[in-house]
Structure formats: C-alpha cells, structure tokens
Image (cartoon, one colour):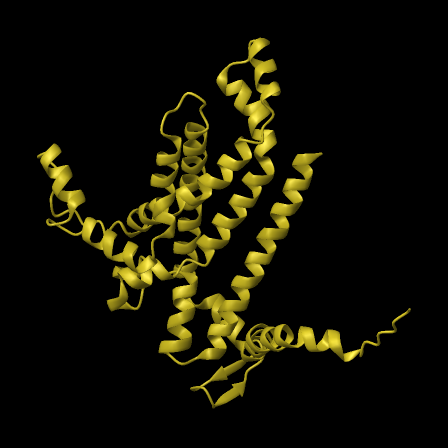
Length: 296
C-alpha cells in the first residue's frame, strides 16, 4: 500500500512566520529606521527634518562626543590589559592537577558573573565610598597614612569602574580559558618537559598556540563589551545621567542615551550609534584578518 502526502508550499512559511515577524519587528525595522534617523534632526518623536550629513559633520566637531570616545577607548584598553591576563591566570591556576578544591574555587571565581549589574553598582558604591567605605577604612587601618577620604568614585572613576568590571567578568572569561586549557594535548606538554623546556617555554610555544582561537574570541568579546559600556556608570552616577563628575564616566553609549532620550535628538543619537556600529564591525574584521595571519 502506498500513501501519497501532499504538502502545501505555505507550510514552511507558516512555521517561519513567528520568527520572521519578530525579527522584522524588533531587528530589521529598527535598524532601517535608525539609519534614516541618522540623516534627520528630530524635535521629539514626531517632528523631524532631513539634514543629510549634518549630524555626522557636527559629530566630528562635538567636544562631548570626543570626551566620550576618549573615556571609552581608555576603558577598553584597561579592560583588555586587565580582564584577559587575570582570567587566563585564574584558568592556569585552576588547571593545575595538584590543586585541591578546584570545584569550589571555580564556583567562587565564577559567581560574580551571575550577579545583577544593579547589585554590583550598589556594592561598589558602598565599598568605594569616602570614609565609611570598606576599601578606604581597611586601607587606613592597615596604613595609617592613607587618607580615609580618598575620592575613588569622584576622581578615580576609570580605576573604580575597571575594578568593578574586572570583579564581574574575570570569572566568566576564566571558564572559556579553562575549557581551552583542558583540551591542550598532555603529551605535548610532557614531551616538552622531557626536552628540558621550562614553564614559560611550554606556555609560550605549546599552550598559547593551542588556546589562540579562544583567546581571539575573548579579546573580541572584551572589546565589544567595553565599547558598549553603559549600565554600570549609569547606575553608579545616575544623578548625573551616567556622566560622572566632570564627565569622567561619560562613554559613547551613555552620550547616545543622553542625546536621544534626554535631549530628544534621536537623529544625532542614531548617527552616534551607527558610527559605533561601524567601529565594532571594523574591529571584528581587523581581528579576523590578524587571526588568520597568525594561523599561517
């Protein structure tokens, strides 16, 4: 007995329809609309005027934008120089075969990454507070010459935010490195040890090349996350709209938010957003080229 089944050509489209509708509504249309807005000047949500490239020309001469670019670039450099070495160092430590309590340490280091940003903002605001903050109080108790009124959050904004993000994300990236380290062939390490290679030589010539793809991925994630840095300074310095004292905490995304949702100029905010998007795409392509050359 043979059975003949007929399928309507509309069945696949019916199955894809929920995704297509959601993707078009929440991704494709906002992207198209923001691109159009980048060439307009808006006076609220309903009044717009086409200005061509005027938003991008103003962006080049806008001192606040370049302040945000400088803060964001400096924070990105600090994030790359801190988060990646610390995460890799923790992974190397926890990958030691003679270390006891590995699971407990993994949990301790990874736990901050599942904490909400609101909690992190409150925690570090209290820790770094003048006089009554735990950091200043502890340092003053250990070193009486330390000023208990040291202005962490007022003057050393970059240091404070970098420390908070390091505590928040180092354990998360550590898991990636740890998985990569566990896939390094043990026989290569053993052969290098027999040949007289020291720990640094084994790491440089065996471990590092083996984990390079994961290292490239984490570098990309750290840079993208740093260039989009917004939530933590916005929560800590909410009274200034996320700018912080003397705009020391002002980032590109924070300035985008202030321009679009506080000043109401959605056109200029869209121009800032598209410039940031092009920078992110450019960095991703550049890193891909560098990674391919390193693999040759």
